[in-house]
Amino acid sequence: MKENIPLSWSHKEIESPKFHSVNLPLSGLPWVHTAEIPATYNIEELRVELETSFPGGFLLRGCSSDLAGYLNDNGFELIRTGAQGIVDLENLNKLSRTVTDLVRRGDKQGMVKEISLSENNRQRVSQFIAHTSYGSKPHLRYLFNNTFDSNGRCFVLSTSHDQWLGVLTVSLIGDNFAHTEMILRNKKARAGVMESLFVSVMNVLRGEGFKHFSLGEVPFVSPEGMKDNCLGVTLKQSLQESFLFKAGHILRFAYNYKGLFNFKNKFDPEWKPVYICATPKLPFLSLIDLFCKTGYLDLSRSELISNIKHYSRISASAG
Image 1 (cartoon, rainbow, N blue to C red):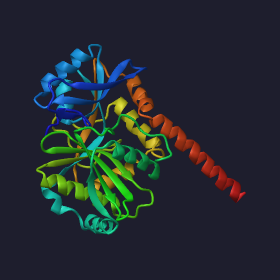
Image 2: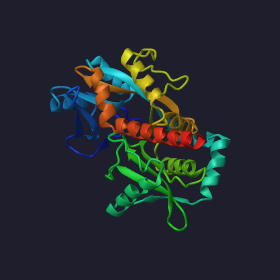
Image 3: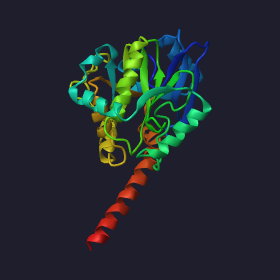
Image 4: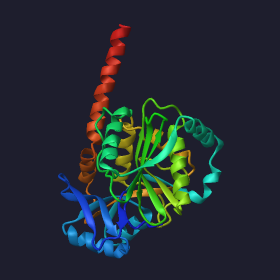
């Protein structure tokens, strides 16, 4: 696996890297959220290029233990944010009976197909978001690659009448490693749709020679038995990390990360730590910056107001 680039970044046959960043106003750091990296680049060349492009410092999210450990050895500060689940595509036959039963239920509702990266399909995916449970809520930003570029692929589970029930987009990290980006489910879809979609996509990738499939990061989780041998340390929380995980737990009403973990854990992945890394420092204010810049603050506020209104109506009815 090529784990020397952050999640949602990609290797491409280009001569020089293309970095995409946003400024974090409180900490003063640019956050490099996505990038296209020459396929020939090694981890040392990437670090040098980043430090040249952002001489005042920068922040990266979605770093694996390998990448985080290397950056830490070169003066970066880091904080663990959660875990990513990686499926060994050569062991798909070991899926539990619960998952295979759900897949069969999903298969009865439609067929999985890959759609082209056309402008029309891009617009249709954007419109599909309105039919999901989070469609009318503030959307999270910069946490995944939602562009239809040459390194991305899109799969849908569609009925015979071309009604989409689920959408899954995938980015290709390397020759044998693919990564989950957008996971979209029609709120009216019945059980089994997303299981069918995921397993179908994994079978397609396996048939094409891919070895590993990342289910993407789940924030604020520490799966049982997860190790971090690459950093040579135990998973001991720092003060900042403890604050981050407690904040995520308090605000879980806005973002159901436990439900996301339970769904991804069905596929029996190997869970690996995911980090934020920054240079020259990783200030506490950068966590607040990320909370705001990703849209998590807007989502939390929206869900809090919605819950208050909901319970107010219940209290009024009871009275």
